[in-house]
Image (cartoon, rainbow, N blue to C red; front, top):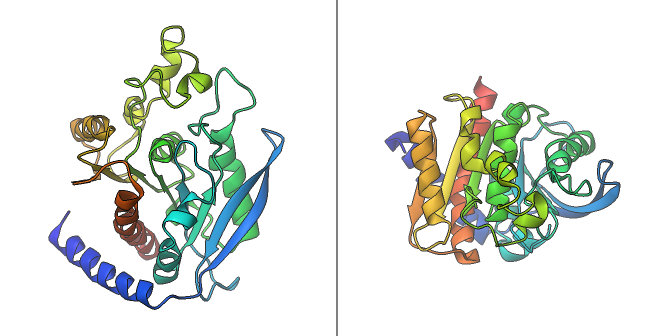
Length: 279
């Protein structure tokens, strides 16, 4: 990270700490959306910042939960995200990505279409329901674990939708884990459906990127079981000359780690949104 950006981050973090100590008035809404592709209602948490007004347009951060989670995970475990919405004046959207969707449109199960839902149906609903910057310059997506995979997966495949993407302890290469977390329910077994796994793992989607087209931030603790695959993705991005932030620090696959990491990524996305306003 360049020195000037680092100083900006530290200043914003100090201000954010003050915001947390002086709780502001972000509005948390528990709303029901509808997925036409899956023919079902899906619950979503939307956080609008203090002073939200239809007279202004706001950027949106889509924040995805992990395996076995739901739309309430982030607000329940890291209520500080309300303060980041206030401080940086962006909307935060936390959809229910189901227990183990991995945010795929499953090639073996037509009832699982979470790429279509999150990247298209949900985005359209948010833009129609709230006063947003309805372009890739006003959209970012990140998440933890399964959601870290999902955020990069969706952003790499839908660069016309998102301008920035992040991952916190993300499962950015699913192939080393063929028997874990219901992935085989979405893609079929690796032994019998190798092509599905190879085509839908994040690390194999780097070829879709061009330098500077997508702002990327990756964060993973050195004690995390996904640390190795995150390092591999970092090396692949370096090999392809794709600019990105790559952060590691002591920690594991825990809410304590994600609580710290999302504070820094919120600054990263704020910087991206502000740059979009200047262009």
